[in-house]
Image (cartoon, rainbow, N blue to C red; front, side, top):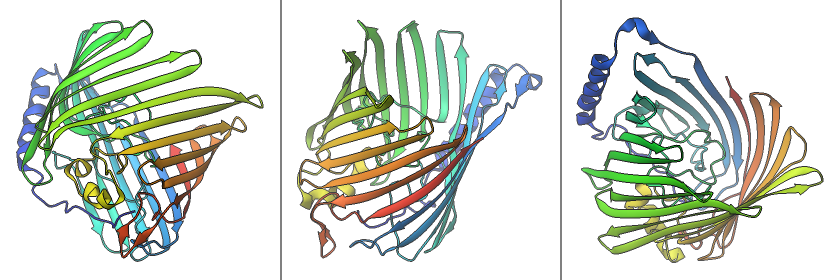
Length: 408
């Protein structure tokens, strides 16, 4: 696990989008019939309180961490306009020099273009972040089309954990607390061409890690063919030509999902692909679900000595990487012991160096909207020497945590 880094939220991020957002909101006001048709709607929310303890590692001291996260969501309407607004704040209290990552720290959107987030407190032991995780407006043209502008969740993923062909914000497969997909700042138009087919176009600006901006302009088609969900997209991704294909279906009782993308970079073509299998079994009259996924990521490190460079690369800074290694294998098995209790075991293996990350967990549903989660992370493999990684997961310390989640 690498050293903890933070981005200065006061960097040039970005004055031009503010005028763009003002124009978008003005357009909504002009299109909306009248304020008398405005409806606020209910306010939904989510509260998380997690506590964690960790052994020391070459990059972090041992210690404890307390995390509290509050999320408020509202979906008001104003005539034909539909708004989606979500505000999230995270307070982290930690021991000196403790860095856990993997969802334990305060989060912010990957490569945000709109200046909608920041730190309220940023100190050694206390970090308090907040921001609008979603702020967008949609206009619907009957059942034929929809146009959405602003910070919004967009996912073109087909596989469940490794999603290399999702050009937006993939989930971290080891994050135990992320309940909602982070939003991206984009203009999106969807044309519904049939009951099981659609065309999806996205234009997205993003800050470049080296300064300036990159642009993404992609068109995706999706269709149901003989029981298989087939899709393909192409265009420009962060100023680079890119394309992808994906399919999901089943053979017998096995679910099969696969996706792959090809990117034209300054260093040549980069292939990123993932293949997954999943199945529901019966064990002692209880459901047991098993998922197996393999990923080959051309942006990943080919050897342990390249891990640090990969962690500092542009794709990592933009939030495109799920893991740092080039070839990875993930298994996740969950068994519902009782109707209210489920146990799970996640294993993430680097096929480059043989190291693995193991995470057992227990989820207990205390009420309809209240759950308690207990879990741990442990790295297996060569650790680090002189602050240099010798394997991807070997330097991960033993981490234990307990988390209470409440939806309201």
